[in-house]
Image (tube, rainbow, N blue to C red; front, side, top):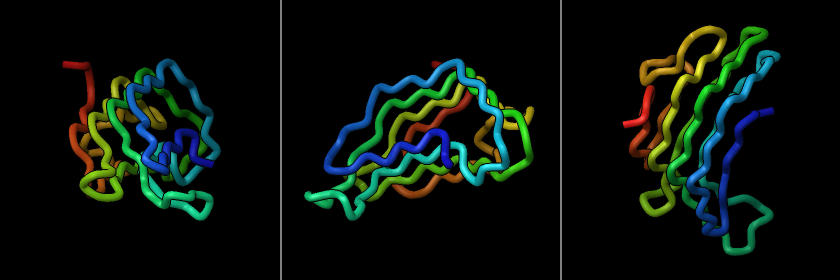
Length: 118
């Protein structure tokens, strides 16, 4: 299971969300975070949503080794992912940064930042 799975569809605007002060004991999961507007078989309009202004603050994952991937990818230029902040996020004792091996930033993603807010 992916602990933070945000996949809005049907033109949903998922925005202004703060996830703060979370401790997770991982059991080797493949993913930790997935932010991706989608279309699935349950949708009527068959249009993705958008993701805006999401903050992950003070998140610590400890436990068993695993990939714990963090994936951000937009569906297209109109249904994208913007302004995602990671502040004081650590995975198995390693702080998350732009150079983290488990971080995947796909197309249609803008404004990802790490560390203290500006």
